[in-house]
Image (cartoon, rainbow over all chains, first blue to last red; front, side, top):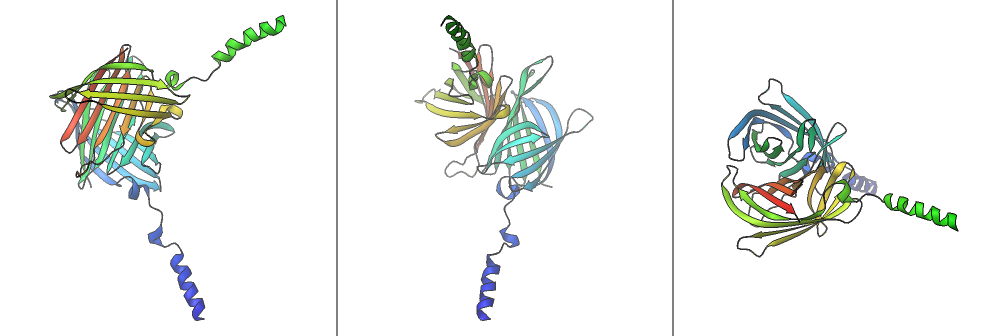
Length: 164
Length: 162
C-alpha cells in the first residue's frame, strides 16, 4: 500500500499541472493588453502633417499566434480598424495577415517588434506605398514608430500609447 | 534524321524559355548599385554621411544574395553579406551567416523589412531598425528608421545602377 501511494504521488507530480501549460504568444513574443493614446505623422523636417488617436489591443490566440486590433481616428470622421493575426516562428519572426491576405512580416525580440508591411498601390497613384517600423513595449505601454513612403513623400509616424 | 534535327531545334529554345524564373525576375532587381547616403534626426538635421555599394544577385528560383558595403568618412567600412529566401507572396527571410537578420516583403518594386532587434553590451535599450528599398528607373533608394539608446535616426541612400 505504501508503495502504491508513493507511486501515485510520483505519477501525479509528473502529470501536467496548470503551471506547466504551454506558454502563449503573449508570454513569449509580445505583451498582451490594451493600449490607448495619441500619435502624429511628420515630414522629414519634423513638421506635423497629421495628428491621430490610436488604440491597440493585443491578445494571445494560441502558443504561437496573437491577435492585434488597431483603431486609428485621424482627420476623417470615421475610425479605421485593422484586425490582424500574427503567426510566430520559434525565433520570434512572424507573418501578419489581415483575413487571408499577407499584411506584414517582422521579428519580435528583446521587447521590440520590427516589421515591414506589404507594399501597395492604387490606380493613378504611383509609386507603391511602403511602410516599415517597430513597436517597442515599455514599462508604461507601447511606443510605435513607422516610416511611410507614399507618392507625396516620406513621413514618420510616432505614437505613444499608455497601457490601459 | 532531318525530322529529328528540326524537332530538336524547335524543342531546345522552348526548353530554355521554360526555365523557372529566378528571384531577380520575380521579386527584386539584381545588379550593382553605388552612391551615397546620410543619416539625420527626425527633424531633418544631418548628422553624418557615408558611401554605399549594394550588389544583388540571384542564387536560385527563390533565393538571392545581397552584399552591402557602407563606408563612413573616417572608417574602413562595414560589409554585410546577406542571404535572402523568398516565400509565396514575396515574403522573405534574410540571414547573415545562417543567423536570422531580417524579414520583410518584396512587391511592386519595393522591399520593406524589419531587422532583428538586438541589445548592445551594457545597454538596456533594444536597438530597432526597419525600412524599405525602392527600385527606381535609375537605381535604388533605401530608407531606414533606427532607434537606439541615443535616440532615433533616419537613414537615406540614393544609389545609381552601375
